[in-house]
Image (cartoon, rainbow over all chains, first blue to last red; front, side):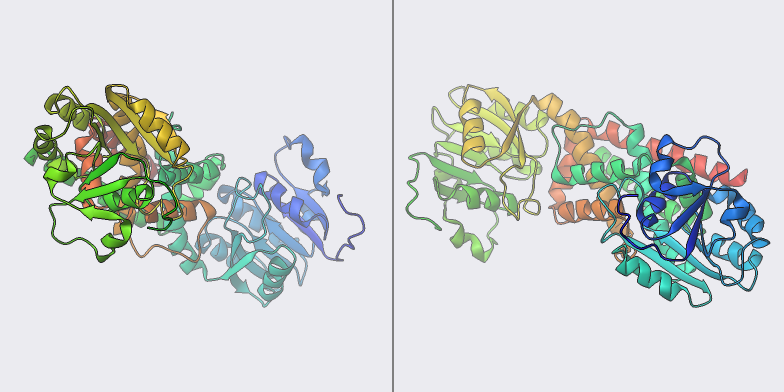
Length: 257
Length: 257
C-alpha cells in the first residue's frame, strides 16, 4: 500500500466483479478500507496484488460491511440473488452500473429488508480516470435506508467527487442521451477509421478525444447503455430519425441545385 | 488601432465579403496592413469602424496588392469574375473558404495569368478563435505562382498559425470527414435540445463543447461543407449507413434477448 500511515477505517469493503472498474475502485479505496474482492474469472491481471486487495470467495465478500457490485449487467441479477442469503444485517449494498432503473428494482426485490441499498453510477471509466478522479461526477440514487447520505459525504470529502443526487428514472433518461449518443457516435466513427489527424479543426479534435475516452470500454458497457436503459431505444431512434431527415434534405437540396 | 507604433507594411490588403470571417481577418491584420473591405450588404455591424478598415467599392478593393475573398461559396464565382478585369499584375489572390477543389478551379479559370493564386482554409471560425488564433491550423494549397511561400511564412511567423501544405483534392477528402461529420453531428444534436448538462460524462462534455464551437457558423458554411465538397456526400452516406447498420443490430439483439 502506498501510504501505510493512513489509518484504515474499521469497515470492510467487498468488491464483487474485479474487472477494469472493480480494480479502479480498489485503487481509490485501498488506503482507507480493508478490501476483499471476488471475481468468477480465473484470469485476473497480474497487477491485482498491487491494488491492496485480498482475493476471496463470494461467501467471504458478501459478509463485508459494504458490498460493491461491479459485475456486468448480464450477471447482475444472479449476483444479487447469490449474496441475498449471505449478507449481514446493517450491510450497505452499492452498485456502480451504467443504468439504474433495472438494477435498482432487482436489488430492491431480492435483497433482505435488513440491508441498505444505494445505487450509484460513477460518470467516468478507467480511461477518463487515468489522471485522477477528483472533480469527476458520480450519480447517486437512494433506494433503501439513509446510508446514501454517508456514501455521498464520503465520496465528496474523501475522493473529491462531484455528487449528483437523482432517481433511477431521471438518471436513465439523462444517461440515454449522455452515454447512448456518445457511444453511438463513437462506434460509428471507429468504423470509419483511419480518421484524419493532421488537417483537423478544434471541434473535430474534441470529438476525437471524446471517442478515445470510450473506445476501450468493455463491450458489456455498450450493451448495458444501449439495451438495458429503458430510454435508450427512444433516444437512439430520435437521433437516427433526425440524422436521416437531415441526410434526405441534403440530397434533395443537391438535386435542386 | 490598438498599437500605432507597429509599422505597417507597404502592401495594401483588400477583403471582399465582410461578414463574421472577413471581420476576423481584419482584426488580425489591421496592425500590419492598410486594409480595405468591400461587402455587398448595407447592413454591416457597428463595430466595423473599430476594426481598422476602410470600407470601399469593389473596384478599389480589387486593386489592392493582396485580395482576400471571404464571400459565401454561392457568390464566389461572380466575385472572381468581377475582380478578374480589375486586379493588377503581381497581385496575390487568396480565398478562405471551407472547400478547395471548386474555388481553386474557378480562380484558375477566370483570373488573369499575371496574378498569383493561393487557396487557403483557416481551420477555425470566429467561435474557436475567440481566445486568439496562435497555434490554430490553416491549410494552404498553392494554385499559381510561388507566393504561397510568402503567405505561409507570414501566417507562421506573424500570426503563429500552424500551416498545413496540401492540395485542393486532399484537403476536400479530409475536410469531408473532419468538417462534414462534425457539422452533421452538431445539426442532429442541436435538434435534440435541451441536452442534459448536469448529469454528464467527460466525453459527452467534449462533444457538447465541439457542437458549441460550430453552432453559430453561418448557414452558408454548412451548405458549403455538405454540398460544395465533392467528397462530402460519400462520407455522409458512409456515416449514415454505418449508423443505420448499428441501429439495426441493436434492435435485432434486443428482440433475441
